[in-house]
Length: 198
Image (cartoon, rainbow, N blue to C red):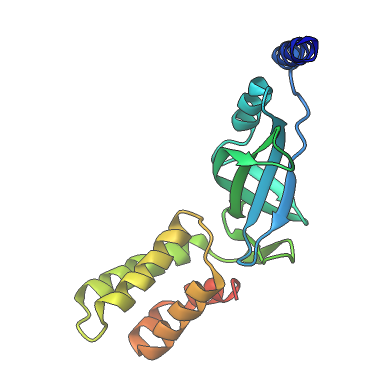
């Protein structure tokens, strides 16, 4: 009975300490996934509800994380995963490589999966003009099947929104461009950009 009472007292003391803590320095643990994305996890104990809240506030969707000389964007997080033992839980977040435009918007900074953030010079106005021309061509083309059209349009949308393009997606779209000569001639700068993901 005394032991149970002691454990209850300790538990409430730990809850009190958690409520009083600011958790200004939360250290995430990061590991690379096979597809070039990252997984970020931060442990907390079952009584640390305040710490869990602070973790979720800090690891919000869209936040930039720097790892292995590269920049990643957090896409989503979740909590309550099992930790190392029965009193430990963890928040897990997932991140994907960031693509950024900088300076005069002629430079794309691309994460090349472990090689860091590498700048590539592209004229963004030309890229945007090519996207418009390709979209217009695809809307009228009858010799390109709908799956190929959707694959190309999906990658173009990712370029516009500065989202990650996976290596497999880049290879598939390059194959489509090479298959149809009009697309090939319309996409000079886009092809160079997409090749940087391979």
